[in-house]
Length: 247
Image (tube, rainbow, N blue to C red; front, side):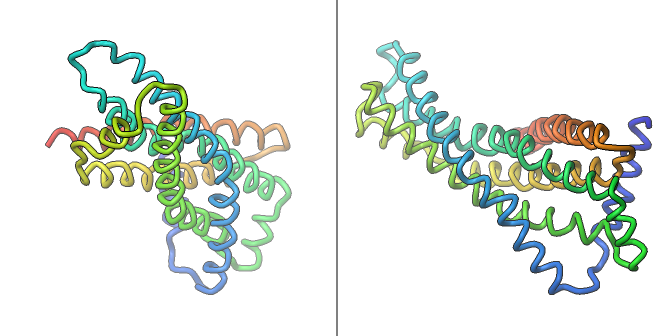
């Protein structure tokens, strides 16, 4: 199928997904389940990666600033800017595309090849909305909390590892993470997060929903979901960056 047909079929699927639910209570309960599946289960990997990446950024920045003209607080400043602007919103989203996206595509793809989706349609249920909408709502809700935690742990990890390794002092680091802070950058970061959350769940659901064949095709759908989600995350990150920074 050519790209234009894929895009058209994607938007037709999204039109079905966002139709008015028949029973709000069912969708609410399912959204809570998806919050646990998508978000809470991802806490360990997000936390571990954030702590170590914050430490790596701090140590690299400290030993990269060898010029006496560069103030010592630049280490904390660089860590904060790197974590808030790019690492937490973009890199964590790419990691979630691999973890969450592949899981969603595999789950829905398996339901398709075992004819469970056909059974929902026969019962008069809007299968697209029932299966996909709770996932989209759960991701859009919980991803900002995961990224906020990632930002905190990344900066904390930079502090602990930077001070422990002798890359900077406590005062220099704390002063650096407070220096020249601009609140609008948080709006920029969380805008990218919300867009990424929607991309991951909707694109992965699309490839899972239109899986055909057997188990091999489920694996192929899972791979396509991760690949195309990652590409779209980076593309929209570039677009959002241009919108916020070219003011």
